[in-house]
Amino acid sequence: MHEAASEPRATRRSSSRFVAAIVALMTVFGMASVVVGAGQADARIGGTQFGKQEFWVNGCGMPSVKVRAWKRPGNYKTVILLDGMRAQYDYSGWEINTNVQEMVKSGVNVVEPIGGPASFYTDWNAPSNFNGQRYRYTWNCVITNTLIRGLDARGFRVGASKKYAIMGVSMGGNAALVIAAQNRRNFDRAGSLSGYNFLSAPGMHTMIRLAMLDVDPKPWNVDSMWGPPWDARWYHNDPFLNINRMHGMKIFTGSGNGLFGRYNALPNVFDDLFKGSTLEFLALTQRKAFEAAAALQGVPVMTYDAVGTHAWGYWQDMVWNAKARGFFR
Image (cartoon, rainbow, N blue to C red):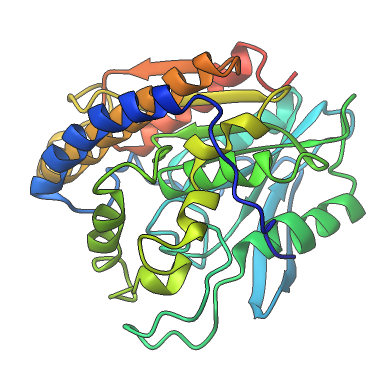
């Protein structure tokens, strides 16, 4: 399944220019120490065994994609959780580092597609030629087509709306917003946790290019994803420019402020300070720009502000906070 050919446009151009100027300054500041990664909470794999299942779906030209999921009869919603830039092929970072699978016991089914490092969960133009990738990423096709079909066949389409929620961290956050906005038949809720929600801001293409050079199997060529910076696909996949498609959806955005918080422990001080703080400060500026534009366009956003860095513990808290405030209802 390919993305729509038409390019979405923000309806308030003046607001776009205003927030673009702000984010440009923040992006330049953040690029002084650009790195990619995420501090981790205490690692754990498996979590609850309640309702756990594992299956594979067609990769739309990629190798088959493993999915681990948790489901309970009578639950009222299913959320698909997307990983970050350093996604692994054995377990999702969500399962390794958080306890959100426990939501299955209190109303929300949890689905975690596995893999896709540096993919932005999108359909790439070509395989990455820098690291000899043997196939083209087709993650948008997987999530909106084969994964949805696999979930439907297993009874995951539940609740009054019979639509899915989707949330993601970092690169998975902006992907979640775009995927949901462009596939309203299947999604009615989307959340971006420390995501980059204004990709067309000045400097962001370079930021992502540099980040991808440091993700295993490195290095990735960002131009293989959506083409050069002026290609229309960069705008088509920018959450900021898809806000006009989000009317009637529930939208959640959250981030830390880049300062050390409850999940920043001594063993991770270097990563948290020189990676997590920089990334989270950039995510914060991107998030605030997105929220300002959404407000001007009449799209309500449920927000969350944390004292913390680019780390799993804070993302875990954001999901539980969203649930407690009725985001999945």
